[in-house]
Amino acid sequence: MTSVMSNSTQPQVSDDDFADILAATREFIREKVLPREQEILDGDAIPEDIRATAKDMGLFGYAIPQEWGGLGLDLTQDVELAMEFGYTSLALRSMFGTNNGIAGQVLVGFGTDEQKSTWLAKIASGEVVASFALTEPGAGSDPAGLRTKAVRDGAEWVISGEKRFITNAPLADLFVVFARTRPKDENGTGIAVFLVPADTAGVTVGSKDRKMGQEGAWTSDVHFDDVRVPGSALVGGSEDVGYRAAMTSLARGRVHIAALSVGTAQRALDESVAWAATATQGGAPIGTFQLVQAMLADQQTGVMAGRAMVRDAARAWVDNTDRRIAPSATKLFCTEMVGKVADLAVQIHGGSGYMREVPVERIYRDVRLLRLYEGTSEIQRLIVGGNLVKQAQRSR
Image (cartoon, rainbow, N blue to C red; front, side, top):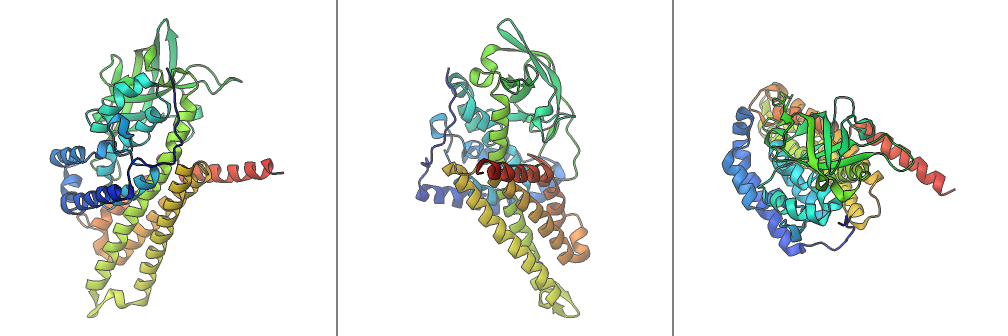
C-alpha cells in the first residue's frame, strides 16, 4: 500500500479547456439555478433535476484527478469555479463540495491505491456522496481535542463517538471519520482517519439541523456506536495520518471557501448596484446620493481585494510556496469581507432588504456561516500570527 501527497504544479486541464468548463458552469448557474433560488429556499433542498445536471457536468468531481474519473482541476482553477458557485444559493456548492474538498481530498492526498480505486471514481461521478466527519461537541476548529475513539480488535477497528454539524451527513454514502487511536505522544498525534460506509452497523445519522440560513445545505449529528470496520478502512494504512490529512484538507478548503465568499460578495454588490440605479427617493435614484455611492464603493473595494487574495493564495498552494499563512489569511479576509458587503447590501436596500424573497436577505443569512466552518476567524488569526512568529524565530 502506498500513500501519496501530490505537489504537482502541472494542471491536468489546459487553459482553453478550462475556459469552456468555466463558461458552462457560469451558464448553468445564471440560467438554471438563479431562477430557482426561492424554490431551493422554500423546499430546503436542491431539486433533483439540478442535481442530475451537476452530475452530468462533472461537478461532483471537478477537483478529483482525471485518473480517478474527475475533471482534474487544480486549486487555481477550483477557485474560479468557486467564485461562480458563490453567486447563487450556497446550498448548490454544498451539494458536491465535500466530494471535491475536505472529504475527497483526504483520499486524493493520503489514501492507499486500493482506497482510491475503491472510492474515488464513485465520488467523482456523484454516485457516492462523501462526508467529512471531524467536528465534535467538544472539538470544533481544533481537531487535536477530538474524543471519538478507534480501538484495534484483531484485524478490525471499533469506532465510538459523536460528530456534530456534519455537512451532507443525511445524504452521505461514505463518512471520512477522524478518531483517536491513542493519546498524543512522541510518535505522533494519535489521530487516524477511517473510511466508514454510511450503512455500516452502528452508524446513526441524526435529524437534519435547523440553521439560520443556507437552506438546502443539510447537516446533522452522526453517532458511531461500536462501529466495526476492516483494517483496510484506515486511510493511508497509518494511525498517524489523520491529523495531517485534516490540516491539509482544511487548509486547501479555506482557499476554496474564500473564493466562494468572493462570489457571494459579487452577487450582493450586483444586487446593490441594480437597486441603487432604479429605486427612488424623492424622485431621484438612490444611487445618485453620495452616501449610497460610498457604500457601493466599499463593497466594490472588498470584492476586488478578495478576488486578488484568492487567486494569489491558490497559486501559492499549487506552487507549494505557502500552504499555511496564505490559506488562513485569505479565508479570514474574504469571509469577514463578505459579511460586511452583505450588511451593506441590506442597508442599501433599506426596509426591502429585510424582506424574505429579496436576494440580499438570503445572502445576509447565508454568509454568516462562512466565518465559522473550516476554522473560525479567530482560529485563522492564530494560525497566521503563530506562523509569522515561527518564521521569524527560524530565520534568526
